[in-house]
Length: 111
Length: 113
Image (cartoon, rainbow over all chains, first blue to last red; front, side, top):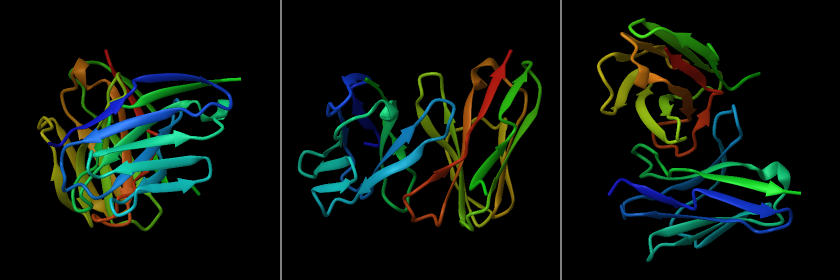
């Protein structure tokens, strides 16, 4: 019930491609779904987050799609760049409780 | 003007030793956390403090003891270090216990030999 399943484990795309990372959760009480980006040797940094009352949120080249009935959400990176190469984590929580992280997706964008 | 800072950045020590990691945030946040990231990059909450009070204590061995002298500082002391404690430890903070966003520190890379 507390798990967040993330796939794929790794992803390789060419510059300009649209990598998609998927996450699924079980706990219907979760009401906050952030994505974090982590570069090697650095701490995770919040990229974008969504609440379950909307189905999509866009910030720059990053878009979260949210499907409440399927208990799934995904991150799309438009026009991906080599500088987007990083590990991406989805997470979920009830706002009054701990943040549960997915297992991470290592993205490599080649020029 | 670092938001969340941790010291040391690297820690290499022998099994059985005791070590501490310090964390400070200058964001004025009320809530601070310790996370452990293992070799497979899995991030797991260890502890959370809100205004110096412990609010989350995951199933972490008693050898790990957090201490929050004030709401801007959260330290982690580890007794009798074991090989399995090798990981990256991240401190994080959030505006309140009900704020989803976490601001993470740069991490402390602990290697136990």
